[in-house]
Image (cartoon, rainbow, N blue to C red; front, top):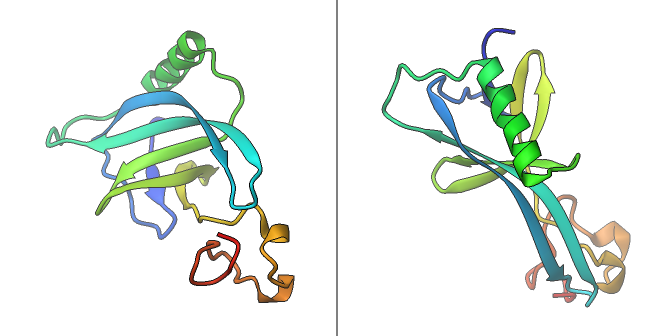
Length: 137
């Protein structure tokens, strides 16, 4: 592979002149709607486009950026989340397929479904737990 390519799940290609503006280790401490305290950590990758249409990130440069981040931030093997600017900053999962990095759609979810009081067959598939669709939040 001599080229780094990112695409959205719908097939739309991220312009070749993207930059990686940051790689971060993100930790989140929170309480879910069932009252359970949770923590999660992930690696955040931020993609950005500028007007420098000739910019191209080579695979070797990307690998060097990742290695530097792993070393300096003491990054473990964690889930990767990609931020990319569309109408607003979008957060995506990441998979590799057919020599392309694919930004996968992420969904919100209720982490305390067993405390919501909603029978499993009535919980909407891939819909967030919210005041409109449950009484758990």
